[in-house]
Length: 111
Image 1: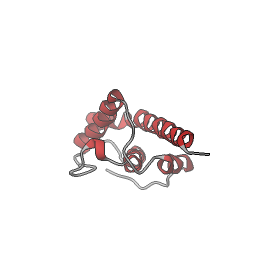
Image 2 (image 1 turned 135 degrees about the vertical axis):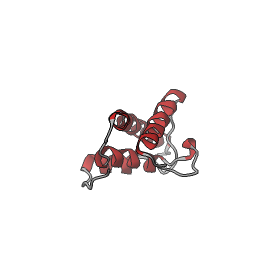
Image 3 (image 1 turned 45 degrees about the horizontal axis):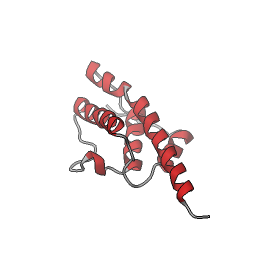
Image 4 (image 1 turned 45 degrees about the vertical axis):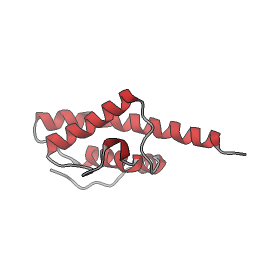
């Protein structure tokens, strides 16, 4: 089940900070984030990005979807509760990677 919500300013900023290209994740972080994505898809019975391989999913779309799920999905059973409970850590990780990507891009810009 999904409920309506109004995004918080911090959530809007997280989505805006994320790049339009895929996240620059370490192998370990990519496995963790993809596992979170697949667990939510499996437990709630939908596919978030049909036909798109994980490594091609734009960062902004991925973090936006995770935030939407965290705020709007209402877990109905233990499997859904477990997958849903992992979302805040995944969101924080993705936001940290966004900030690092943003910082690197600023350093690489010519003066």
